[in-house]
Length: 379
Image 1 (cartoon, one colour):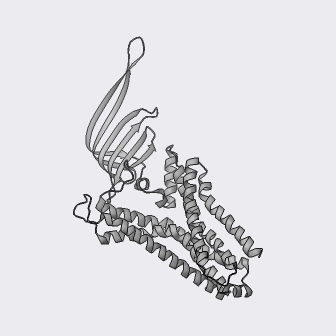
Image 2 (tube, helix red, strand yellow):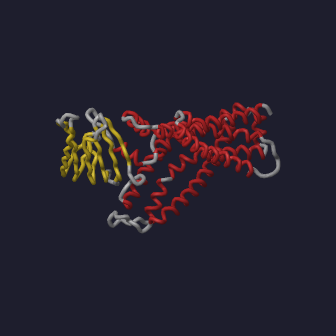
Image 3 (cartoon, one colour):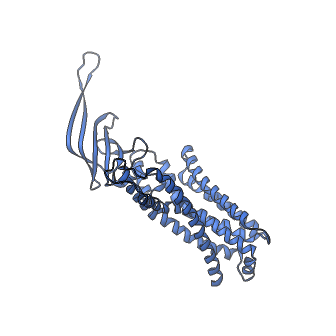
């Protein structure tokens, strides 16, 4: 049994590595071509010029994220190629006569799939977020900012005395915030003050230190207005301060999370950000779906090896296996597209986040079990 395990594992691992390498090389080329438009520019970042070596480093740092996205497809295509080739050369028939039954073969592939589940979790939760952040910070040295859209990141925080809405336009490579605006409201929904500063820095994750801030305070007082109703008088006080300390629990991670795409975050960062949104009465549907996708996505590697096993029981002696590999490519692409589509549909239709994230995997698992029952057990 050890010989059979060594044979199958060696063939499948080599094939998956080759497929993943081919995909990564293709995406590396596409990303590099996309970066050529920025060569020779510094975008106001001093004397630093964005050169070819910087573009190569930036594209290389994107590889772990591409590996995380392409790993289930690579597992499927590589496993289908090996299973089909073993069936074409009648090697799998010999293995079956040697005692490799359907359930034992499925167990072997599931153990292999478990290895890729752990690898996918490691890459997607630790390596890819760190490399993505390093890539964005490296590129920000030459673009001088990390931002999202045209309005930056919006955050909300509830405190004992007031509610705050915060806008951060950009995050610089040295972890400073640019274009900071803080709006303070009382519990009746009336604006109390606004604070604007061109630059702000984090202070021990318990406060922000705003430099050259402009603070505007609104004071509404009620006075006698005659026989009809009391009159309200609004007083506006505007002050300029060189340094202003704003106590808050909005940390560096929360701001960087808000400025990055949710699918590029680590699971723990997503969980903490969801708790922050819920504590401040904000919708977290989009981030909850991404959280559950992060939980279920590595498990898709198990589904892919289950889909590949029935290809070993297809009997053919002539012709190539290119059609089977092409079928594997189409199945993998359809899973990738369906996984994204269900995320958008779940967000629009307000589905349960775990259901929107788990449906593609459950659907393909049902297909794989049906194929296993029909082609393997019944025949």
